[in-house]
Each structure stands twice: as C-alpha cells, then as structure tokens.
Image (tube, rainbow, N blue to C red; front, side, top):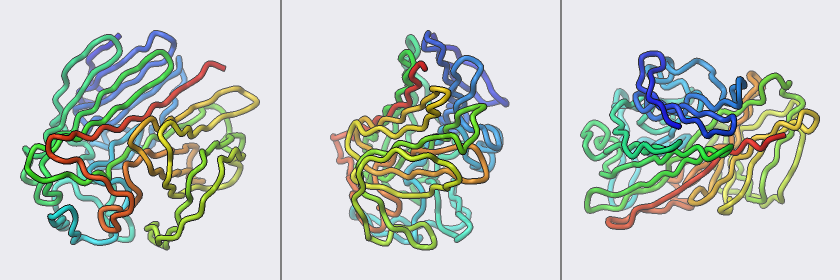
Length: 310
C-alpha cells in the first residue's frame, strides 16, 4: 500500500509492506528516508528531525549523499576530463569542522519528480543537469532515479545514474542510514561486518592509502565508537546490528554496486550507520575504486534494509 502525505510541511510518501513494516520518504526534502517502523518501533535515528535536515542538512533517517559521500580533501579536483570547483556559498555545499566539503549537494532539495507509484513501491527522479547552480560545482549532467520498494520486511533502494550530456559521470555517491534498536541499550548491541578491507584514515577522516584485509567479524558494540572506512565490499555482503537476548536484528545488504562502506557509531547517541558507497571517501580526488557512468550506459546500484522477525 502507498499513501501520499506531508511531514512538517514537506511532501512525503508512506509505504506499507503488509507485514508490520512501514517506511516514509520525503521527496519534498531531498528524498530522505524519514521513517522505518516495525509496528510502533522506529528503527531510524530521528536525531534533529526532518525540518532541520531540509533547512540545515543535519542528517537523519536515510539521507542521500550525492554526488559524493563523506569528505573531499580539496576544492579543485580534475576528474573524468573535467574540473570540480567548490566555492563557499555554492548551492548545497556544506563543510565539516575541518573545512572539508561533505555529503554532496542535494540535502533537502525539493525538486524530485515522483512517478510509477504501485503497490508498496514508487520512483523519484532528480534532473541534476537542469540546475546550473549545481553544475557549477559538479559539471556532469545526469539524471538520478531512486526506486523505493517495501517488500514484506525488506526495504530496497535502487539508484540509477544516467548521463544526460556527452561526458561520463563519476560515481562517488552513497547513503547514510541511521539505524537503532529501540529500547535496547547500546552496550547490548552486536555488530556484524562482512569480509572486506579496512582503510587507514588521517586526522581529517581521509583515507591515507593504506588498507588491511579483515575477515567477517561479529563483535559486541559495548563502549566502542566507529567511524571506519572499508573497501572491497562484495555484492551481497551483509552488515547487521542485533541484540542476541531480545532477538531483534537489522540487516543492511549491499546488493550491487556499493563496493565501499563507512561504519559510524558515535558514543553520544544510540545509532549505528552502515553506509553504502559507490566509492570510498575522497575517491573523486584519489581515483580509488572510482567508476564512471558513460553516455548511454546508466549505472545501477542497490542496497536493502531487512528486519527479520524474531
């Protein structure tokens, strides 16, 4: 079932998968995933709320990070035969405490076109090339389409980048789902990571170039904080958080096209993020694992969030 609605004055779409799980996305506020509920339990970190995200890009729920995820270590970047030039005051540009451009340009943008609503699924498209103020920072015309489907107890997000000009489009975007196990103390959570490579980061959270392979792990979260980067994530890899005593479990499956990840779990709040990324942090600069979507060759990536019954 699908329903159009408003949240805090922003156009939204509510999906009901028919098995206790519901999801809400807000095309009127950057296509952010606002809610994922299992009955009365909210599984997404609400943090500062939707209005704060739309106005100030303070992340919550499942934000889209486009056209790059996480940070860039410089403002002038030669890539794919073109030059990215980031300027203070540019449309959608935000910086972290170190002054680095962070999380792309589309936070809170309302110009999403919704189509193909059916069952518990819908599609939304953003025409990046129709916005000169965005092309001034990222000069690669393209269309971004998100297909959102709630299938029983699995929320699937499929993204397609289609170049609309003559140049290829670098793929460095991602998502930042804030997950929580409501009512369960953070120190009881167990974190599962797939086999992949762990990246060394500098003091600005930029990869240094060093990496170390690690096997799949299952570890208590306890009093540990995460802000870790990974590459070599295989299609179908599963990240998960669970409480063995309660039986509650949330799985994030990197179904295709997301070969990098950031895992974020601050000590200051009960959330954990398994962030699907098409390329690692700073890939527009380093070229590390950076793919291009060529004219006439759309690039597709997909991930899902599953909530098995306990």
